[in-house]
Image (cartoon, rainbow, N blue to C red):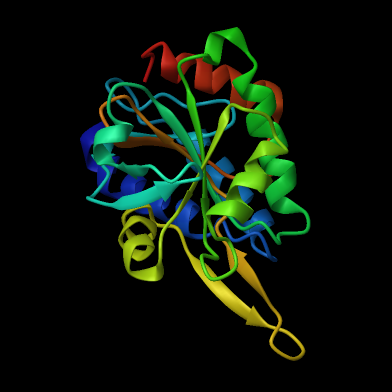
Amino acid sequence: MPARGLRPLWDNLVMSVIRSGLHVGLMVLAAAVGGYMVSRQLGHGGTPAMMGGTALPTPRPVGGFTLTDHRGASFGNAELAGRPSLVFFGFTHCPDVCPTTLALMAQLQRDPALEPLRMLFITVDPQRDDQLALQRYVAAFGSGLTGLRGEDAALEPLLQNLGAVRRVQPRAGADYAMDHSATLYYINAKGALSAVFTPPFDYAKVRSDLAALVAGAW
């Protein structure tokens, strides 16, 4: 089948990987689908396979959004332009996946080859994660991480645009937890979604892919 004939299938599979990146119970599924995707050969002129992630055949511009960073400054599409970003959705009460992923991002941020890459952590729990809570949380992972928050009305368009999901899990009393996508989203310097990484993450492979993305190989 010609490469262009596989594009619709490829796009659908990419979105399946993005949406199946839930950190509770679905990480194995996401990894399996991701492994299938990157193993597909599109032939001459197709999208090359990455080692640890999945490149989109055609980068998708990120729709309009406006959030606030952990310092209180506005952050939207204009701030995405000019340098690439790696985006992760999570929340400060997350017991395992979030701190593990943010530690990985902090490690990647220290690599000289990835110096242009901006690291963004966007909370999916704005009710508990106010600016101060977000500021304290991201500070624990070094100075290279930017925390972002927005009320539900501001956050939902970005979640939908990137194919990310979140779901409240009620607990005893008024307590609750959040299920959310565990995907890492690579946004290029033009503000377009170019690649996704789903868990489990292999540092060496993710680092190699990101270095190639930053250098413009995809």
